[in-house]
Each structure stands twice: as C-alpha cells, then as structure tokens.
Image (cartoon, rainbow, N blue to C red; front, side, top):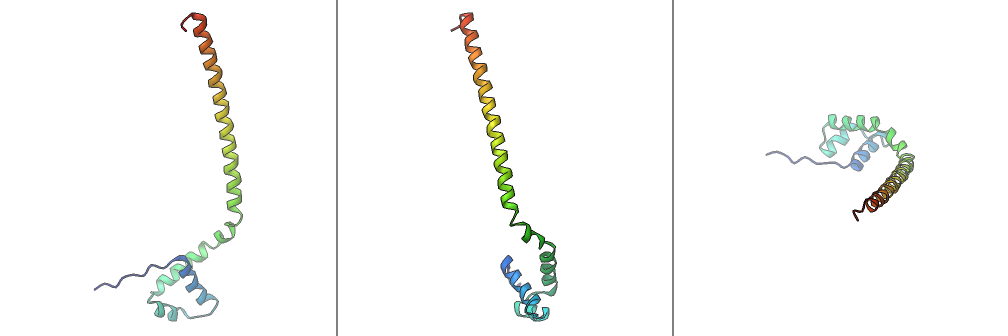
Length: 104
C-alpha cells in the first residue's frame, strides 16, 4: 500500500530550512523526523536561495505597480473621453446634415 504524501506549505518549508540554517539541526535529523528525502530538502534549499531576492523586491514593487496602473487608468480615461467628444461632435454634424437635407 502506498503512503500518502504530505504537502508542505511555503511557511512549513521555510521553517524546516530555518531549523537547519539557524539552529544547525543536521539535514539527516530533519529528514528522518519529517519522513522527508534529503533530495527534497536540498531542492527546497535551492529554490529558497534562487528566489530569495524576491523577498527584498516585494516591498517596493507593489507601490510602483500601483502608480503604473493608476497612470494607465488615467491615460485610458482621457482616451475614452476624447473618443466620446469626437463621437458627440460627429453625431451633431450628422443630425445637422440630416436636418438640412430634410430627412428629419
């Protein structure tokens, strides 16, 4: 019978890595206690170090993204307003032309 695999959350993975890196708990002890293969532990560690820069970028990014999205929204609102004005002008000219031709 196959054993059900445990799915670890990101917080649990970081906690395991922290125990090894800060508390100096040997990898073999961690893996044995969690029924985890060492290759899985080392894959987590590799991903952690490869993606570590994102933790520092996350603080400045949302503010910049909000500003960029706000600028984009303002630009699109101006564009829609201009199109509405042009359409209103064209419709007025169209109605005036129909009146002069006697179609209304």
